[in-house]
Length: 449
Ligand SMILES: *Cc1c(COP(=O)(O)O)cnc(C)c1O
View: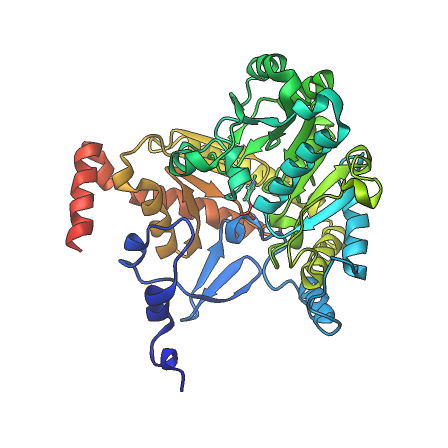
């Protein structure tokens, strides 16, 4: 018998797993919560305890867990084929999904290139923009750099970190990254200045439209995205919209770009694409960009990129199921009153003395708890309090993120906000002391534990 079977799953986790974005020393000090099943907006652990999925299993669940229609779409596909390749072959699901994505995304985006994660969708967009200008030739070959926003997050691969603005990642991997120009978020004058200064060497501007998720749900002033699009046009620079987080209804419209009537040259989508079922991403391009890659074989204008599981049939089936549910359940229509309810309830949260600011765009919420000594792990403590009360949420530093499935009931939405409120209050006592001293006390406790 396999030796591992003698140990509990929690022990196996502690002995062999390495979790993403996790200080394993902290992780080993806690019993891991094992999620075995889920249904609708709830996650269910090994003991049968139920938790509200307040962050949509990292921002990607859209219609709830175990949605019968998506479950069936995937199991039907499983009876045909689980995986085949997009290199040299095609399959019906990939083709149908591409057509439907072109239909629902902003006008002008005509070509769909699949990959597997948000990071790769961005990586693909950057390489497409770069290679596109190289192949245009002449003075355009100088267009080899990018403008991104300060505090931007576009993923964790080297290219996507290069156009990111999270200092922590840059200090960790600095020497591996390529240089990019950083514009102050939401400041159109700064963007205009950078475009003027670097016009001839710019391949593209990359932005998270309307909301910068990982920065802490930072929202841009109305009109900013529209103005960025106009500036890009004026300077002949491509615009890449990273809708990995904002896509598929999150901001209250199917895509955030719609709210400002903007059509990007390249669009990155992932997270919600399969409703949170399977890893799948896509980079959509205009026909003009696509045509820049056409040529005789020996010209080598091929786009040199592709992943093994690109366009996986099970994932495409899940994505098609996801789009079907949007239609059948009129998800976007039914979402609107829930966005208003959420806004109403958040007014109470914003008034709490423990809360510095609440930022909301549709179903993306950041509750900013202000500055705390990192050692107090304030965000983490709030999250632990919420877990005790049957709600799973995640912090981004000291910002608490709420990002429920679009399908959540009004009753569960109320529960999510109420539990968050109680948890913020319950997490406070230590912080009422001098925060630095409390941080040291907390660190000492952790060591002693
Ligand atoms: C999550 C995210 C990514 C990265 O997606 P992964 O699937 O985690 O690689 C990229 N851009 C934005 C805006 C995101 O929120």
